[in-house]
Length: 458
Image (cartoon, rainbow, N blue to C red; front, side):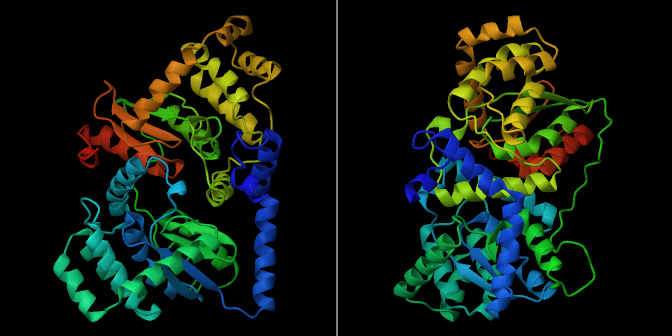
C-alpha cells in the first residue's frame, strides 16, 4: 500500500483509476474541512497549545525572507511557536536540481523588494559557511532563534565570514550536536509531510513560506487567535501594476502549460484575463507533464501539490472539483490536435477546455467523442482537425517548447516568458504563484520599455 501511495500519480506503477482516486481524495474540500475540524477537536481534548512549527533551512533563499516575518507572526497571534532547523532535502523531491537552485536564487532576488526585505545574496554560500550557520543556530534557544537567525542569514548570504565567526564564538556547538539537530529537524519535517525549508505546519496542514502564510493567518484568525482587529496580512506584497494596462505598447506573454498539472489548471482563468488585455500577445506552448518526462514524485510531495493546488483554486475562484488524470494515452491524443487548433487561433482556448475537463468535470480527454465536442465548441471543423491524429509533429513541437522553457531555468509548469514585441529581452517566471510578478514586469515594460534589471543573471 505504501509503494502504491508513493507513486500514486505515476501510470507506470498503478492504474489510472487508483491515481484518480488519490488525486480526488486529497483535493477534496470536504476532506480539507473535516481534517481541520478533527484536528481542533483533538487539540482541545489533549489540552494542547496552538503550536505552529516553522522549518528553517539556512541556505534556502526563501527561508531568508520568511525568517524576517516570524516575530511579527508571534506578536500578532496567540500561539506557541517553534522553529525546526532542517538540512538537505530528500533528493527525490528536487527535480532538475541545478535549474531549481538557480531559479530559486533569482526568484528571491526579484520578489524580496516587493516585501521590503533586503536580500544580499549574489550566489549560494559555501559549504563551510553553511555548516557554521547551522552550528550557530543549533546553540540558540527558541526565544532568541529568529533574532539570531536573521543576523546569521544576512551574514551568510552576504558572505561575511567575520560576522559568522563572531556568532560562532558566541553560540558554539559541536559537530555531533549540529548533525543531531539537523537530522532531528529533517525527521520532524518528513513526519509532518513536507520536504523543503521555509514552511509552516499547524495541525495537519502545511503552508509554504510567504506565498502561503496568508492561509495560516486566516486559519488562526478563524480560531479567534488574532490579537488585534487589523485584518491585513503581516507581510503583504507592495504592488504597482494596475488592474488593466490600457496601453498601445505591446509585449509577448508565452504560456507553458501541461495537461496533468493542477497548478496549470488553477492558472488558466487569470491567464485568459491577461490574454484579453490589448497590450499582451498571448502565445501558448504546451509541454509534456513531468511524469511523462520520466520524473517521479514522492508521496508527501504529491499529496502536498494536489491539496495545495486545490486550496489555491478555491482562493482564485477556479476550483478543482472532479479529477480524471490524463497521463499517458489521453494526454498524447489530446496534444496531437494542438498544432492544428493553435494554427486556427484557438490554442489557449483548447488547453483551457482540456484542463477544465480533467480537473473540474472528471472527463477522459482521450475520448474521440469528447475531443470532437471540444473542436466543435471552438467553432472548428472536426473532419479537418482529426487528421492530426495521424501526425507525430506535435512531439517535436512539445520538445522544442520544453527546451525553450529550460532556457529560463524553468522546468515545472505553468511557466511563462515575457518578451518585448519583437521577441527580445526574455524574462522567465515559474508558477501560478508569480502571476502578480508577471503583471509587475509587464507594467514596468509598458511604462519604461527598458531591459529588466532582474534578468542580468538569467
